[in-house]
Image (cartoon, rainbow, N blue to C red; front, top):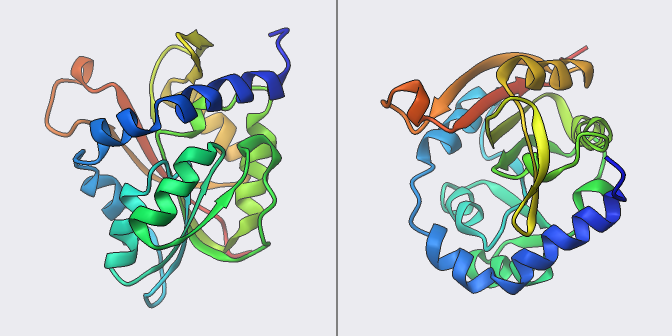
Length: 207
């Protein structure tokens, strides 16, 4: 991949900035309760939890986490999304690019990465996962859901994506020192060929 990682990121974020209202209308009613439960059920210790909604978009899931009583902080690289998420959820939202994260160490009980990490070019993914690992408390949990594929990456219209199979995704996550908890495919209850999303849950070891 010869393209500069920052240039790839800027182009993808520019797409989301230019289509933010349309994106919100198209996704605000999506049912991701299975994913939210997968994260929360895996966190050990007493609630409320401190959660990072990575790539929070316009704030749909931030609002849900907050309504459930948790301290939810959003993060997005698109300025339009960050502003919308603050207004919609009432939560704190940080404007940060995934490939230049600046996160407090050991702050979060859980990181919720729903349909976001696949936008990170594969060359940049190990550093992003390292940053997320460091931001979790020992024993903390990372949830990820990405469109699955056969380990191809490149442009899909104006957005960049990396589409991994389970084995390759597991390799990235275990190389970042995460321990696997479980995975599943979405939408629930359909034949595998009709389940384009791979969801997985991971723990930062206590030791």
